Image (cartoon, rainbow, N blue to C red; front, side, top):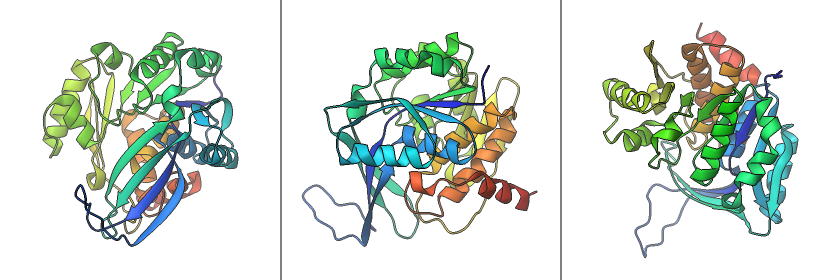
Length: 309
């Protein structure tokens, strides 16, 4: 019987974020305004997001035996994340270079997974009973696709709700779509997966319909300042964004959203209510610097929801 646990498969990287008004061309050097080093990686961020929202959380990941690996373990310990299936490798831990626009908070990111790319199917199998006892299982596409597919299949066989954050976007075989109870791309990723632009709510509806036709049971497309679009066989609903304050950095918003969506679905909320809860979490995260460090608490999300009725 599940205790409402969320198990996340994914990577940890150290984020090095630079604030800059422009991206350099090849061979060009630009002076930025400031930089910050902090914990990141989609899997780790989503685990932190879910933990801060009150869920018991386990993480399946791999880091190096280095300073960034130590930062990972400090991060997980601080938020009470179960790390019994977090493995180590001789390969260095990964890192991400993040360019953040100081006025808009928009970002451009290069990720090198490092040790995280060495996670294996055998290590996922070592987490099988942990996954089986979870209310929801969450994965992304920063670890090898074969490992993601193996883990999703394991979770599906054990009757666990599966959530795939399709980021970064890459072509997916239909058998992977069929393993997804919930697919959560952003608008750029949805466009890449569907092979058509997503510029409007009508576009989001059409893209979601294509992804459902490939086998996903529910699709939630995040739309930045416009909120999110949720669709399944029974409904198609736009959920507007919340305003929690000026945008400082958007880098962690999608991870806050996915972690919160997992928590809300695990608690039994329907797809629209869960999407609304996730939009609130994402809205708070963009008002802060960093990725893992920007994740809101349950009290903060509940307060924002209460202010908006």
